Length: 115
Image (cartoon, rainbow, N blue to C red; front, side, top):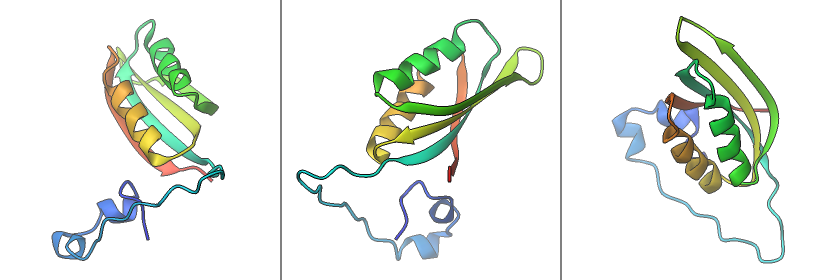
């Protein structure tokens, strides 16, 4: 079984994807799921306030930032790398959509599940 955001699943060809079946786990009442770590790469404008916008979005979902790297690349552009502790993929998906809407953010990618 693989999550839909798994790099293996994204790399499948159309014929293989036809063999995939949707799966949704039933929540276990009274039990807390173990969070997993996720690494995001954000390509953005190298401008004041972009990091603050992203970190505020992350905080609004009560997601822990375990590591953050930010640096300039070409003039006017930057990369932010976040290692996050996320409760579930639904929250991660909502967060990513929220980050994509932040002014100055050009692209958001899950680059790997952190170990």
